[in-house]
Length: 346
Image 1 (cartoon, one colour):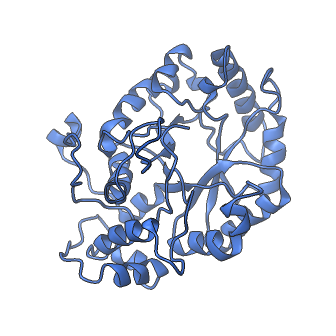
Image 2 (cartoon, one colour):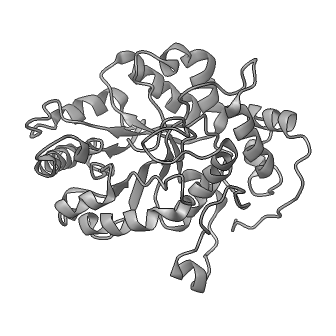
């Protein structure tokens, strides 16, 4: 999963990024339609509803497991984020925790479903069994097999076989037929060339359009959309992974500074929303480190800077006020200049 080494806690409020980044990157050139025709105003709520974060609540080790009560659950509930994306698991603990987020925070899951037999992925009945445990109130959409083009030889045949089985299983079930079924994802956009038009076995495309540390947030989504159009026939796309990492020595893409990551996070959600992406998932909520702990870390300063900017914006401020995110921002960035009046349609 490309460029995901250090995706720190990303807060719902890291939306806007109307400012540029001081890091030397290429200019952000808008698409022809945005540049020449303008942008139709949308309700702020619609934009917020397009945002999601990736999680690993199903893991039985690491911070998602050991710090569920002290960090993960309270942070997710207070952020105001409405959607998470991760693989569905059999674990009763994982199921209970995600259902708890739904009951207490209205958070819904884009649930990934992978074949139990990856060598012959013809039986997708496990998708129904898994989804039934979570329930239709919790599951909002079905994500497919993750980055199938990284699974070795014959992956294209496996992609088609599994996508067909998954789509038929879900659409043939009265409980789940109405939920969107995303195409199984790819690690590389050009992998779509091996698949052909499969719009009959998916409802939406499924991008992993990481821009790359040498590009601004809009740097890859256009190419990914073009490639997915070959498969989904122009149906709207979800982005189930995107973001920037801050590792300068990693080999899976260029890392950016914490300052750049903080600015780019908000711009990415906005750029993707403007380009018609149904849901954009920042990967991921937390990887290493915690936010708001007794000792300040890079994640605290990264998020506080973005939130403090958002607090100057009339459309967004009410969504942040009274939350711990506001307190963190006021503490670490007490004198953020500027004011942006309301611009969204109401």
